[in-house]
Length: 363
Image (cartoon, helix red, strand yellow):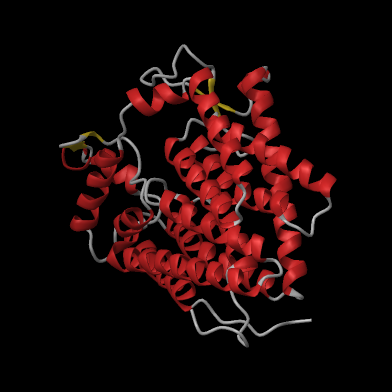
């Protein structure tokens, strides 16, 4: 069975625009034919894959079964990441598997072995973004009146594990956004216990681990990274410097791009819009803005619709804040260019936030 749905025009249009900008930038900046082909496939392949995946997910019907299946699968994946990460943090595992070792310039150095990175093999910041998507859905399953009591208890425990693991990634923006998600969801569902459990767990982590110390004592390099990215975008407004080449270009001219008024910039822009503009030109930056605005608009409309219509309301009401939190973190991390995080977000967005055409207006 297939249902008629409204195409999220801003999101799809933004992704296509980012793909076109990436293709132009690849052709203009590739030093060799082989590198150009790699850059071209990277810039075009990601948006095409995300659109295709979203089309497949949203085409599955009936809607309620699709949403329930996606919520359960993502809740299980998030819980598996949490369990693996907690084991890595507590034991640790051979070769410090599942951890990013604490850096010498961090307040975590000497206090903990490292930050939970899970099975992804990526930065803990990206695992934090994944938890922002899976945790609200897990809590929603725990609050769902259609779930049996024993299963709701299991989902509650799974949500607790994910929240603790998120805290031990020591990703400050993810922790703050998760608190906002869960408190908001608790208020919507009148679930005071969920709010209380969230506050208690985060307070305990802050007291028993260096999480509170990192919030209070460790600075951030984001202003320096954003400044570096904006300089590159200003110098290469038409074609950018090429997909994946910001670090290379910045390192080749450190006085211009790495030395900033806010400190030394030694990483990429850590902002979805700035990175797109720096690497693929202003056209790519506009595409990224369109995607972000489309995600925000669709999230708000879907939450409001779900609260009115009932049924699987609790899942829709959790997916909206999840995507909003993901969008917010993309302002401090390059979530669009990481396959894992963008794929998780595409699943949540297409499963929950694209409405039926018969009941909704265009997005």
